[in-house]
Image (cartoon, rainbow, N blue to C red; front, top):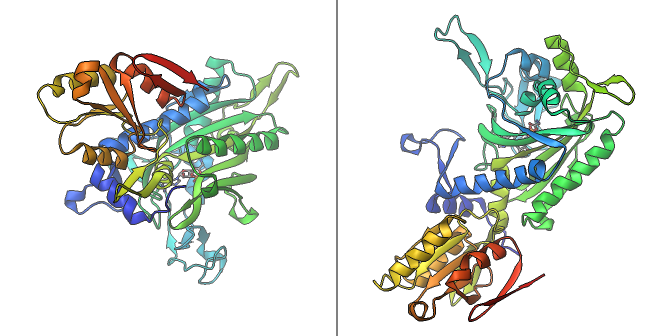
Amino acid sequence: MSTRVDMDKIVSLCKRRGFIFQSSEIYGGLGSCWDYGPLGVELKRNIKEAWWRSMVQERDNIVGLDAAILMHPQTWQASGHLEGFIDPLVECKSCHLRWRADEGRGKNCPHCGGELTEPRLFNLMFKTFMGPVEEEASVVYLRPETAQGIFVNFSNVLACTRKKLPFGIAQIGKAFRNEITPGNFIFRTREFEQMEMEFFVKPGSDEEWLNYWLEERFNWYLRLGINQDNLRLRRHSQEELAHYARDCYDIEYLFPMGWAELEGIANRTDFDLVQHSHYSGKELSYFEEESEQRILPYIIEPSAGVDRSALAFLIDAYDEELAEGETRVVLRLSPSLAPVKVAVLPLSRNERLVPLAKEVYTQLRGSFMTQYNDSQSIGRRYRRQDEIGTPFCVTVDFLSLEDHQATIRERDTMKQIRVPIEVLKATLAAKLSGESIEVLPPGGMIWRG
Ligand code: GAP
């Protein structure tokens, strides 16, 4: 089991190794905005790829969408965001639940008893202007959730895909919220990415589908290596439910500051389609051929954050252990999420070793995100790769010049095996995809499992 780590260590590792930097750091930084560095961008790409694969690629009944961030301002009237977010708000400084200040709840959070912020008239949406002259331009908003882009495209997607209920539309994209109390690194930021899927179902089957998605989404995190002890489901109380939700669960992760939401899974009923039909005057229903009736589908929505998931995966993977008398920091990331899959490391910069190592590097980089490194001692180079979660290092040494084999070293066990260079790519591909493979020198391979 991995060591529980404090947030400072994660922030420091992220900066040092190029996962995450503070935004506009040279100007003193911009409140709660973060930039993803060379490794962070790979980690995020891998998370999004894993989500897309499990939600779209591997399913017949879910299709993708990439809607614009700027939407017609009436969208936000229909969705309830314009009205719902302009109350005087107070927010609990510890559990971050928001409460309307005019509800006279006193100075402490009704949920956890934490201290509340001062009341402020607040709309969480960022406003901007469309058009060249600000005074004449129309006000538009940066979307606070990607979901609305899906609802307003419901008929378009239905018409071109001819999907039958139940079916889903998935989208990954940026969302913006002028959060009252952002913080905890990338946990709560003002600009973030969401992975949302709106699943349209027949009314009456909504509870069943909510349960289905709770299980699917919970298992997704487990499959990607999150420790089950650090993950739980929490049902929203009636007071907590968003204005559009009949029922909602959070998948919570045990972050260093305590249990907090990683993903929300809500039963949004037909609220959004009804509202957009009303405001746009367009019919947003589904025609069921069997019954020859128009149906207003209910919507089940699993809504996850890319940044929050990245933070949870980093925290969960972080481990420290004693190895050869030193502390070894190792990110035990799932191979599918690791930013770098393979590092090619010649034993030294010797002029006879480098050409073969470069040949190996060229052979592998087309298939896997691969790094080449020939500086420092081999031990230090292994440690650097452990610290960024690289699952496999390939070492080329003097014996390789004679037997044309290289060493594969595994990150987690530090075990080493020798493999003929011509089967290196196939061996690594099998190992990275989780197949158990054993290589028998001088060239035979057997797969296990
Ligand atoms: N469409 C529903 C919706 O937006 P939400 O619970 O407000 O629901 C869904 O957000 C997910 O988006 C959260 O579980 C979280 O992972 C992510 N998220 C929301 N606000 C965020 C913020 N300020 N910073 C980072 N991630 C955020």
